[in-house]
Length: 377
Ligand SMILES: [Zn+2]
Image (cartoon, rainbow, N blue to C red):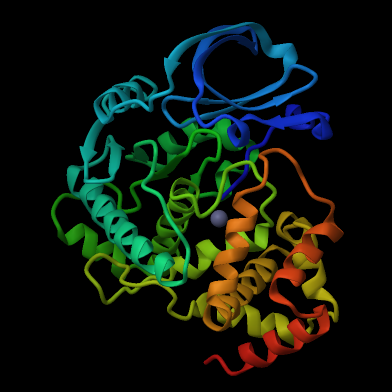
C-alpha cells in the first residue's frame, strides 16, 4: 500500500469530532469544493468534522475525501439516508472515470475494470474471490468479527505498463516507476496492469506463473487486495493511526503465492520465503531495540535504505503474533480500527498501547519473538 494522505490533512487534530462515532444515521451532505481550480459537488456522509471547518467526507462510491476548509465553497444537507451506490451505478461511474475502451468483468464481490483480455481479468477476479473466501474464514477463526463490505470492491487492470503509469501518476507521483500495483486509501480501489503482455488463451496465465519474477508479481496482486479487504471488512479502518508494521506485515502475511496452483495462490499464512530470507539476513546485523522502532513509528518503511528490512521484520512479527497470540492480535486490530480517523498517536503511545494489550515488556516480547522466528524454516 502506498498511503496518499496529502499534506492538507495536517489539521488541528485535537479539535476533531468523530461524527461516525456519535451518529449512527447520517444525512446526505452536499459539499461544493474547489480543488486545483476545479469546482465539483460531492455528496456523502461526514465522518469527521474539525473545529476549523475541515471535514472527512465519505461519498457513495466508498471514496474518502479529506477536505480542508479552504477547499470548501459551500455545504448543505438533506434528510435522505446515506446509501452506497448499487453495483450498476458504481460500475457506470467507474467506467466514466477511466480512459475509453474499459469494460467490467463482474464477479460475486468484485468489479474488475479492464482494457486487456477478458482472460486476464477473469484470472484476477478468480484470484480475488479465492482470497475473499479465505479471508472471511480466517479472521473469524481468530475471534475477529468482520462485516460485509459496504461498497462495491473494484480493481482496475490496464493493458500495458505505460497506460497504467499514465493513470497512476496522478496518485503516486514520482514513485509510479517502482510500483507495479497499489491499493489507494482515498479511492478504495486496487490498480494494476496486465503482467503478461497481451497474449490470448489460458496458456498466458500459465506463462505468468512460470516467469522468474512470478512469485513477487502474484504476491503484489494479492498483497494489494488484502489491504482492500482489511479496510472494507472492518478489520481495519482507513485513515486511522494504524502502524505500518501492522498494515504491511498483515498484507505480506496473506500474500505468499503458491505457484503450483493454477490460480497462483492457495492459502493464508504459509511461510513467506522471500521475506524469511530477508529477515534472516537482516538478523545478522540487527540492532538491539529495533523492535521498539518498528512498534512506535513508520520511518523504517519510508527510508529506501531500511525498507526491505522493515517489511521483512513486519512480516515476521505478524507471523509470530498470529501464530502464537492470534486472539490477542485480533483484539489489537479491533482497538486500532475503533480509533477516530485522522487522529495520530505519539510514537511512545503506540508502543505502550501494543505492549499493554499483549501484557509483555518490550524485552520479553523481543526475546520471545526472535526465539520463535529462529525456529521457522
Ligand atoms: Zn502494502
